[in-house]
Amino acid sequence: MNAVRTPEKIDHHRRHLFGVAAATVAAAQLGAIGIAGAQGGGTETTASRTVKPRTSFSSLKQIDAGLLSVGYAEDGPADGPPVILLHGWPYDIYSYVDVAPLLADAGYRVIVPYLRGYGTTRFLSDATPRNGQQAALASDIVALMNALNIQKAVVAGYDWGARTTNIIAALWPERCKAMVSVSGYLIGSQEVNRMPLPPKAELQWWYQYYFATERGRAGYEKYTRDFARLIWELASPKWAFDAAAFERSAAAFDNPDHVAISIHNYRWRLGLAPGEPAYGALEKKLAALPTIGVPTITMEGDANGAPHPDPAAYAKKFSGKYEHRLISGGIGHNLPQEAPQAFAQAVIDVDKF
View: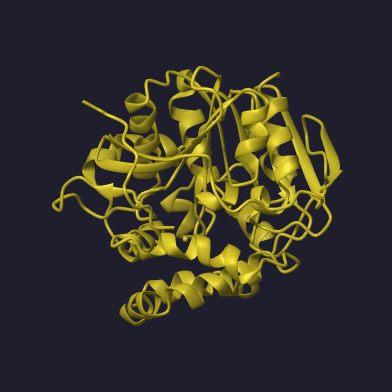
């Protein structure tokens, strides 16, 4: 029985596999930002910074789902249309601390789970491999939807979370009403990822090669917070986050499986760590880089310091109603936390497509 419970104590991160042609990956990694409105229409929006940041969610809960006991924040009416918001690496659910109440006020039931290896999410068995491959993370969210009796939801995310929303929309479209995806189409292929890129592009993935070594694993384990802070600064060079905001998220990295999940994720992408046979069929489908037919809004910040593809490169991967939005005003990689109003509006708008 999947009983929802409120934990007594809540403990309060990327290589984007672009999943398009290798030439597109190279161009994106070399820093091409792209146009505001790719194929399918688009808009440019200047982010408002007038919202005073919040410091907590209305409720934090725990539920057994699939292989995990999942910690998650919930806001809004229990009978409202569900929205699932997924965070990236090295971030956590607090990326959505300002988005959640905006959507709750609009009548949505908002679910913001800690991914495996973050916060209060734990494996139910010590014997379960600490696997960070893309199909495993997506399967976790489908299991969470089942546990919460959510048949269909709007899914939205960035970084690891965007890739996960892409996979759900591609492989389980009957569970996905619509999608918001920062940086577009991020479904990965190990085959594409074997192709070398120009040196300048490879340099942007320095940490992935670091993680491929035992020194890198040990370094990430020893300096997790310092590492995460550096990634935040590089990925969002104009985001003036304060120490308190960072520490709220950094607590999620104290999860006992965080380092193992992070290292496996990046090693698996390079083919340096095995995946699980249980996800083989799903990965085979993903390696074909399937198109996504659900209504979609993709987004990009105008100051995203992380490598990301040109919107024109992935527009054709969305076969349903589609729009791309460029959010200006110095917005970096953690778009929902840096521009919560724009992100929440995209969720509301795509639900009406």
